[in-house]
Amino acid sequence: MAKILFINPVVREEDVPRHVPYGIALLAAICMERGHLVQVFDQNAWRPSEQTVVDVLLADDWDVVALGGITTAYGSIKKVVRTAREQLPEVKIILGGGVLTSLPWEMMDWLPQVDVGVIGEAFETLPELLDAFDAKETDFTKIRGTISRNDTGDAVIAGQRDLIPDLDVLPYPAWDLFPLEEVYFPNSQVLFSEEGMMVQRRLDINASYGCSLICRYCYHLGIAGDMRYEEDEDGKTRIAFDEPGTYTRNIRYHSPEYVVGLVKHAYEKYNIDFIGFLDENLMTMDRYSGRTWMGEICRLWHEAGLTPSPRADGTWSGVRWSGTSHATLCNKEILQKMRAAGCSHLVYGYESFSPHVMKTIGKGASPETNIRSFFWTLEAGIRPIPNQIIGFPVEDFQSIRENMAAWKRLGIIVKPFYATPYPGSEWFSTYRRSIEAQYDGDLERYILDLGDATRITAVISHNFNAVELLGLRELMVTGNTQRIDEYEQIWRRNHGIPEGQPSTMIGRPEDTVAAE
Image (cartoon, rainbow, N blue to C red; front, side, top):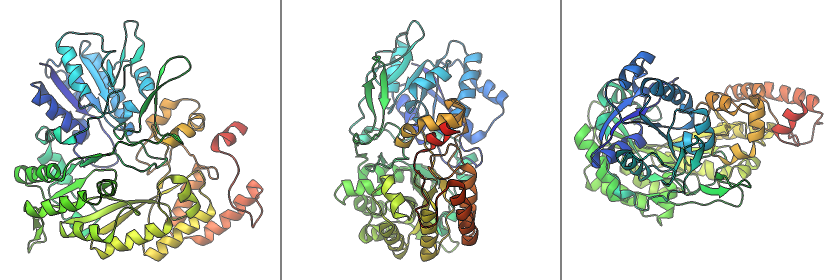
């Protein structure tokens, strides 16, 4: 049996660690079920010195060092695999998650220390790799769902791994391997609702994988059926994702019995008071199930004795929870059921309140459905949390004003994220040439620069550059319409667009880059 060290790399360094890495916790549980010896070093939780990382790597005779994460963890991953190879020349290093799946060829080139990459879902691929290690095999090019190196050192992508059809076969996450009491429970508070601010012991779960929508800025990590293998003209395997006319989805979700059983387990074992649903879109699953899934979760929540009951000190027995929703997929009835079962807030990806911008996103919503869902959610007693984005390809002065008008109507102010073309998304493929040009042709520099879209990186707006987007967002948040009006006149003169014409330029960012 293999002796495995899982490492959770650092992510979102500007914030405290808030979320136990659910994927690693599941994979650790799967490996332990199969008899492997498992330890986890949660680098993101501890934020340790470089020497501590070395000490952990030398603490035992590891057979495997396995790590993964989202693309924004790349900088940390790069340092970890380099250190691991220096300290442990013979250990097998496995990399997975969205960071590898979105750019498998590039990652194997940029990270020569990695022996095998797991593309897409790892629930079956990782155990097969461990079996191969146990058998002293050195050729992994036949294990589906992997990218590895052949005898000459060239990377080879094996066949595509099918997604598991029944999520309920998965064990419960191995939360015991993570510093719950030391790090995660003290950082439980969720500042999106009154109840969220009172949370003392929160854990997060995934009840479903993927989403039915085709948002062009989104990437489903290879777990939603949107990933396919193609051969290019040189016969090289290419990993392709959403492109116009090729949208596919494999909608998967745990049964309500599994979901509530997992929460009941966490409540009884860890005395939690809050659950965060990490799902991309809870309402997709409810709609796809014929409006039965979420209602049954709520019914079983009551039946399992998880319904929160307030105490005099402001705390509660039972488990409150939060998740995600969608403007066109929710309805009054399900929102009321969710509130009765303890839902405190729902995050809505409204993105924009501008009709011409929303038509380009692929989300299927409109300003009217956004506003309707906002008030429906408030009326149900749930706090709606509106996410928005600025810097879409067709963002212009009209869309900026339409967003500000919607805020006034709703009585809110939103600080938008920046439209960021993450690898794996449709807009990354569309604008890749422009992205690389903005980083002097060095794509790795862009990956290292990526964050959580609260700061600006590559720009995909046809109309505004990075400095303009930074300034316009600040003026939006402060409600300074006068300065926006004044700058539009300057902008029109600079671009030769007369008053009365739409404030939209022709062309795409790469055309501007090429011209310069």
